[in-house]
Length: 132
Image (cartoon, rainbow, N blue to C red; front, side, top):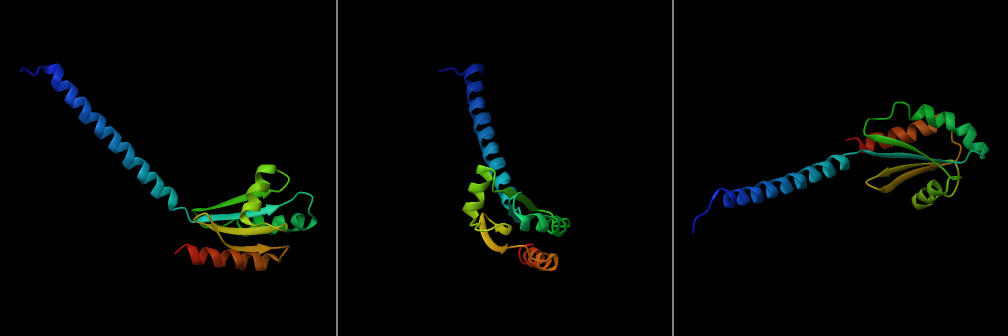
């Protein structure tokens, strides 16, 4: 049986197809590893109508100004239903609350209108513990 150019071309298409699929799988695996390299999140749960949140917000903004790269800072307003759901999943019971989330799990939280010094120590302790 004679194999012509067209028959051999089909074989090459299979090889290129398999190579493409394997390349996509490798890229997806690489992206998941890279995304998993994220240090964590600092999540601030607040309410615009909360007096304590009003006085705490400037302290929080100052404390996270020089946060380590790889850490994401998020703010959840409990008056937004979607953000309220996320805050409840984290375990928020009062406002203001600051959560440290690593690998999708809450590793520490700070509740109430604490001083800027206490907030700075709290965040720095977490950065030191999880940045190494």
